[in-house]
Amino acid sequence: MLVPGMLYLLVFKYFPLLGSVIAFQDYNIFKGFSASPWVGLKWFEQFLTYPNLKRLLVNTLMISLYQIIFTFPAPIILAVLLNEVKNVVFKRVVQTIVYLPHFLSWTIVFGFVYMLLSVQTGFVNQAIQALGGDPINFLQKAEYFRMIIITSGIWKEMGWSAIIFLAAIAGINPSLYEAAKMDGAGRLKQFVYVTLPGMLPAIMILLLLKIGHILDLGFEQIYLFLNPLVLSTGDVLDTYAYRIGILGGKYSLTTAIGLFKSVIGFMLLIVANRASKTTTGEGLY
Image (cartoon, rainbow, N blue to C red; front, side):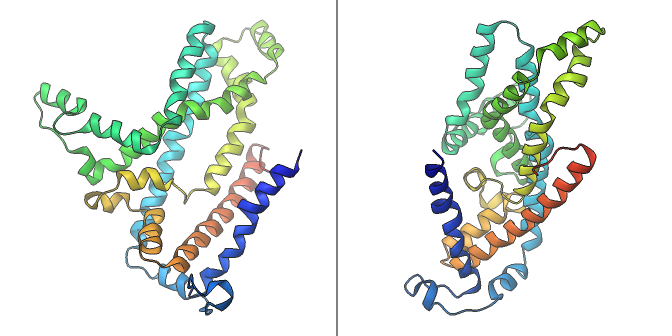
């Protein structure tokens, strides 16, 4: 039974790691790994001396920070609220509705956002005009880019991510709630002393994984919403790697950027895991 999973990991996770050597080569797709000349740390040096590197790192880290502050807690809050609903039919209907956006592609989500924020026909601008204000071109203003990314991300993934936390809540022993009630604990105290501790292992593991991928924002979402007018706040490592590496044909540079992100993510994961083990007793290992 383990063979399919092991084969998947070997073929799609471990075997591709061999291709990381092209980060140290002047890779040519016609010559392959063996015949491409070695150039040492040339591509890392080119990346680290890129004039707009600071902008890329700041944008990437800022959006990741906003995701941790706003996007990460959203499914936790939703799971807790759904757990409090006693009407089973209503609960299942709400769950189905909030799950659905996960199955939409980011292209469709971008279309929804465009229709919502459009200057000519968007509901938001129509409401602003109805209140006597001037329409705002949200999608072409850099100051709104991060807010749009975070908000659309919450709407799309909040319901799906809540499944894990609902499962964590379902695994809590009901006798703990009964004991809390007998001790006079209300809903709030039951959440603080029973529900939250029961969810803590799942919360910490997912938070640590998020920290390990702090430089990975999801290329498709950022790329679809990006345009030349919002590059100052929206251009991130993933979009730069695609633009200079894939479109520009510099595969070695793209690989170097990927290795840079992986090393930074691994270091942050180790530090965060040690801090978590020290403070909460929960960690990945």
